[in-house]
Amino acid sequence: MPLMIFVGLAWVWMILGSGGFHGPANAQDIQRPNILWITCEDTGPQLGCYGDSYATTPNLDSLAQRSLMFTRCWSNAPVCAPARTTLIAGLYPTSYGAQHMRSSVPLPAGARPLPAILRQAGYYCSNNSKEDYNFPKPQGMWDDSSNKAHWRNRKPGQPFFAVFNTTLTHEGQIRKRPYRPTHDPKLAPIPPYHPDDPEVRLDWAQYYDRISEMDAFVGDQLQDLQKAGLADSTIVFFFGDHGCGLPRGKRWLYQSGLHVPMIVHIPKAFSERFKPMYREGATSGRLVAFVDLLPTVLDLCQLTSPEGLHGRSFFVPEIDANRYLYGFRDRMDERVDSSRALRDDRYLYIRNFMPDRPQGSYLNYMFQTPTTQAWKRKFDAGELNDVQKVFWEPKAIEELYDIQSDPYQVRNLAADPEHQAIRQELADALKSKMHQLQDTGAIPEDWIRNERKQDMGLAIDAAWRSGQAHRDAEVLVSMLQSAQVIERYWGAVALRAGGVAMSDERVWNLSLGLLNDPSLDVRAVVAESVVRYSQQAEQKSQALNVLLEIPLQKDAPWGARMIALNALCDLEISNQQAARIQDAFERDGKSWSRSLPDRYSEYLTRLVSRLVRADDAQ
Image 1 (cartoon, rainbow, N blue to C red):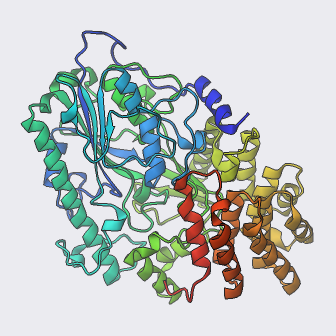
Image 2: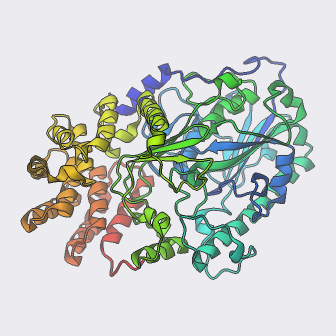
Image 3: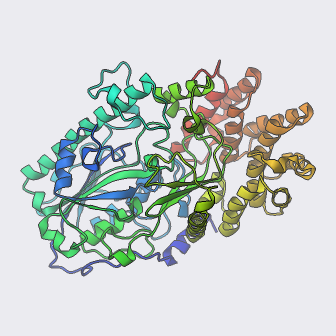
């Protein structure tokens, strides 16, 4: 049974508690509100209404004064495609394998995106600008999804669900050069993890300039609504799709990557049902997330929520509100990685399953930002302090932060004796959540499309054991010699992270044997480890040849090629070796990703291009 069907059937029976909605499901006499989503890209809560004195956001500040502003909203994923996939389907993409950046995995059987549900209820559904979902779009999902889509095109009297998204604040728009900023770079609030550098200050000033432009866009949308006489019949949401587009914001599981503004305005005609939870001009410290948006909209429209959703309405009674928020990070563009996060009212816990991969691993799109380049140059020159260096060094397996006292998450408390109880509570809750969701981040990405049913419980346990394995030779040996390929895979990941277990002779003997493992995923990870850590030139050469051959094998799966190319990009290989792969890719590259959707195609190209480079000056 294919994994997608397996998790789809499991999803149908998994009812995680949508919280109980207010009001009848299909009453014919209910006045349905219009729903307007105004969204922006790569924007955290750097707004005047959220207390940022450097920001210039008069329209959003005014909206907040007559709305409810949520102060603890997470996007669940810190990058656009998986975040948008979460909010439109009301499911964690990790439960069916759609969490990797710009992947394409079918929705579970029976699942329907929000506009499809609303269209069935009689709504006109339009999306202007961007979709970017990690699942093939079902036919008839929108009435119109294009740059011409608008609520004005509905039938007379028909309620609408309309999405207007602006790209003004996108990462690619905050690094223009030359650029003359409106906000004074000298006054820009630089976070402590960034170096205080002119290029960094200019990027931050430009980011705030773009926010001001986005604020004007919001004002235009609200004015259009007012002119059409629809302000009193339309519920308005404003939110960003994830955190700030500067490095260590977007793509990472800190508040800077996951914390987004969420402002909800409910006109008086529809707000009575939600008292005292909804009050104009108030703030809410409830823990809410993108996975909650679909059930929230259905609650506002007095429509029954489908069974099996992973979220719950923003307005459920306090007893049913979220206790934790869950975040996930897997492949980001061409770089393979895996981390999970959980937060409660005060603390943020992160588990890094591939700790050897620095947060600042080279990623083509991110390295186009001047801040990234300046930050890396200073690291290479030894000019960063301990807080600023962390981004470029191997990650800790566990991270724990007190969000109240450490708003930028720069003091890791995971090893602090006084915080062991909360660390253990959040770690246990995160592992339980992963098991509950059958989190597919515990298997290599190409296995998701495999026809063979995967034992996800075994895989999740193996991923967690890998955190012990690099410290405990007995655990590492047991994983490397396991008959279960997924245990060997996570043992190999632990091996790649180094640690005291590497000094055990049994580990080395097993590692050399695994260079011929039947799984190319295992073989690739082990080969990189041998190249990195072996003291014998013959062993290093043998392992490097294994890595060089994997991308060239005719029947190698796409995911194994990704893992091998990730390794080769981080190792020193000769121009001749790189050229051999590049020549093969130019000749046979289309077959390397045969049967994969186009959304995947650019990432192998980026990795191969990275192999042949004159220097690493970036």
